[in-house]
Structures are given as structure tokens and as C-alpha cells.
Length: 113
Image (cartoon, rainbow, N blue to C red; front, side):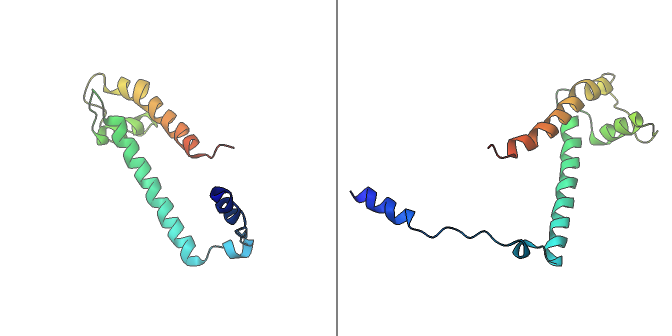
């Protein structure tokens, strides 16, 4: 009987009011803060992607990962991986794995309905 009384008291709580659209408007300070946070998260994503592409049984330094990407884009800037199999390891194994992780990761955060 006590559980039923507690449940009734919970059911009688007032419903939450949905905020109006005007209340959700971003102020200039919130917009600037959101821009800074998003930029910092994008920089962190790029840095961690470069590091994760170079980590593994065959270590490739981040500078050589950047050089490999730039050489694939047609820019002769930076060093290619010094190991003979470094380029193949990056383009055949690590970059596809990295892209797959970048595509699947947001799916884990998407709410299921």
C-alpha cells in the first residue's frame, strides 16, 4: 500500500514546461563559447586521428603521417614513412580503420528511438 501511495505522489508532480524558442536563442557570448568549443574539439579530433594512424606494430611518427597524406594530395611537402611498409600500412589498414571509426563513432551517440 505504501508503494502505491508513493507512486501516486510521483504521478502528481507538475509536468515540465517546454521552453519557448525565444528562450533558447543563443546570446553572442554563448555563440562565441560554442564556436571555441567546437573548434577545440575539431583540433583534438585531427590530432588524435594523426596519432592513432601512426600507432601500431609498425610505428609511424605523426610528421610522416602528415607527409604521406600531403603526398597523396599531390603536395611534395614532408617526409614519407621511413619504413618500407609504412606507406602500405597507412593506406591499406590504418586510414580505412580510422575513417570507419570516424563514421561509426557518431552513430553510437545518436539516440535510439
